[in-house]
Image (cartoon, rainbow, N blue to C red; front, side, top):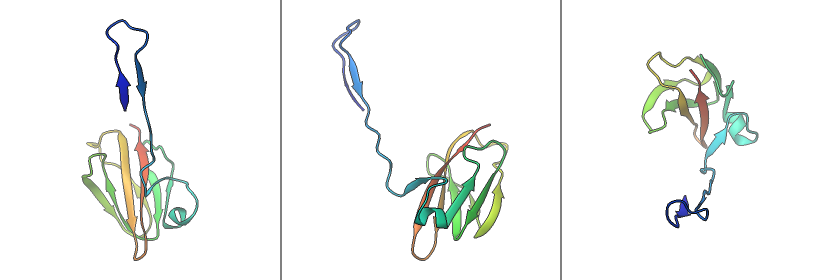
Length: 107
């Protein structure tokens, strides 16, 4: 984010925000190789979400701390009561690929 402030009360202040999707992070429901490795429904979710993966995977919070591990196959992820609402990342890895999918937990 960049910006210029021409002093308080000026109508000429502006901010430029540039958003770039991080390489390797996919939206749940995407197509292609990522969709074959991991499927998540619903996203965003409130109480639980169904995760179907073709590899072992781990769930991380927004600061990179590992929250839980999930085994290959289909499972239901129910965040613990102590977990805060927000963005979580599910990383699935097999012998050829590593995919990270962003999910949103709403309380």
